[in-house]
Image (tube, rainbow over all chains, first blue to last red; front, side, top):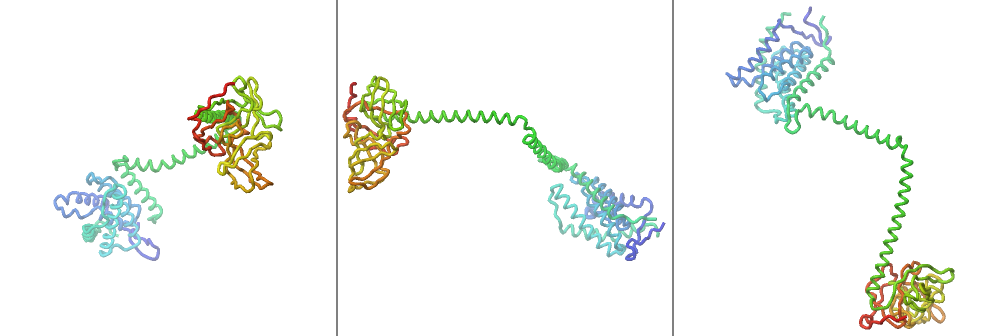
Length: 177
Length: 305
């Protein structure tokens, strides 16, 4: 079975990557565990959103919106479950579902292998993710969530910077084409 | 072979998944004042249909009651019409009684004001048998002290004089009869002249020279010169003024409502006396005459029959 096909006819030639067995599950579990434990020993690392980076990466790589949004939903709900009592189930789930869908949809149209593209896309997705979180908190939870702060801007840059290297590591989990 | 992902299918899937999670959120979120958010949403989503349903049921019920379920309406309508007629009749009777009470109150007040003047109240029991004469019959007669030529008045003014007195009834010639007359004078100019009837609603004042100034609406009162009626009792008001030869032709509107008489007073004396009129009587065409208070200081005893 050929993993590469022309998804936009004659316009682009974009690969749909497949990963080793259990790669997605292991990566997801690893990201969630790190997200939960790292801030305990390294508080500064709380600025990272590793589950989001996992969703973005696999969404861009798999390039299947349905798969991407379902993966985003699962990771988001797991993150909600591991979060504190102030985070109801579904808060991150909604945001990451949408991010998974958008990443898969954009990955099916653009070449996202270049580090610069990944950096820019991660910043964009991080902003969208925070926007959805803020919107959900404001509308459903009636919580005063800011749309943008300097901390969020720095977090977007840091996550994008980390994403560039994390994505390179995750590329190694791909099946050779 | 790898299938091309369906954009629409994924969009629907996205919507469904997001919706599920929103519902999951709503189940968890509890608002202090309104309970759980899912309940708020459910109520908000269902209540418009409930309102519409209630409105529809009400509309259908109204339509049914007002257009179809009318079996008893005609019968009820007939009963209501009968009840309405009975109520109208009752209202008329009550209004009549109220009017009678007002008249009697006015008579009583007039009587109390002139307590020293010998007079007796009487009820009008019938009118003239022929249309050519203006007479009425009272329910009192000789037994009550009523004699011929006694004056008959109401609180509004002069009515006429007794022309026949029987045992229990008396016949009164109204001021509007062509054979009737009363000594009168104009209030402002103090010009005197007899006022008599013509058989018509308006009276005629005679012997007022053309040179004398008379105003329309001027009041006419009794002069006391006829020795039947006391002085300054209202007779009427000037309604029409026409020059004549050699006297003016003055038409006078009677002060008393001669066409609607029900209760009157008969003056039980032939001697000159004066009446007090402290306040205008109801439905009086003319203001009260300014009578001196001589009656209070010089009362006239009732004449013995």
